Image (cartoon, rainbow, N blue to C red; front, side):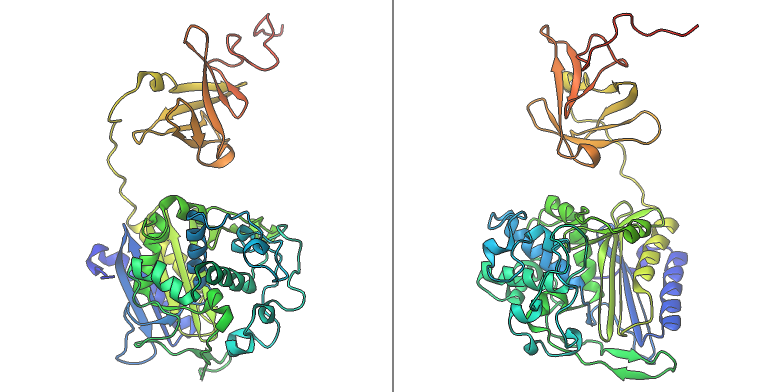
Length: 461
């Protein structure tokens, strides 16, 4: 991905460089690289390094750790879209004998399967994958630590199982399937399971001295689907565009949207922290923005990918140290800097290409009991329903082509909106998941459940 440094204002570029320079210096990272994406393309790249005369560019590989999980999730969603599996299927249906078969595919994707966070000792990230050649070596004698589906508990073995599922259903290695179905179609030719030059070396930085120790770079074997990949800021910038908009060669926009939708019950601490998990993607609220993406770490490396859909701005940050710079916070800050310094310019308003009189009749104010709502028709053929004042239930709707509408988000996601007409053809009310919306509060001419007092509205003397 070619980076155009002229797409951002000089002040914005300096603020971005300052942020990563502080992160590299204070975090004592041997090197740190970052890329910002806006409007579907890379618009800035920056690097800081402790080696004079060597500034890593957007083509230098770093290990990305658990961002690998998002790639694995894409492979599983492809199987679902092809009808090979259903996300509600228990694992046992497709991969019997694991000891975790009652967990569903969706629960594995969302880390709600109840599986342990790590594999049995020794520490899998710093030992050869050959020590765990089979799934039973990864899962251990008691795979489940929590009731299936009850809570979010991040699980590396869970994504190892998903990788094995992909191999079973595709009849090929996880690495080969990933390259064929995701990396090649998206043009991610600098993303690979094994390092390819030029690539950074992984380092540990002594916590109390400015000294370095090289970290081993192990092949994770069976656990590769949970954290094996090496990539670049250039490739991850392309991947961020895909996660924001989809690509029919890999996954549709609708399926990618499903990945971004919260799927895990949040722990109390997560609620306070404003974070949850979708299907292979982290979802969080920071600085008033809804952000999606994933972080990653393996000995010697840190990685973060963060996307703000509303701002159409993404950031990728990579470093070659085991700990130090808070890359998740750095990525969030890079998004914020661009979004605030150069706010997204909205597309011009345009009217509907044609007007359907029957649909136009639905527009305007409606009342659910005494709660006022407005139904608005949009140029894309959809509709929105939102409170006239204050907070409350709101949703966008898509037309089903038969006079009914289906909710796309929030409380009314998946619910049916049905206009109800009187025998003479006039519009009586809206039925939304059995809730009746009338043109006036408790309109006696509408079919209000329980009826309306015949004496009507009154005062008190």
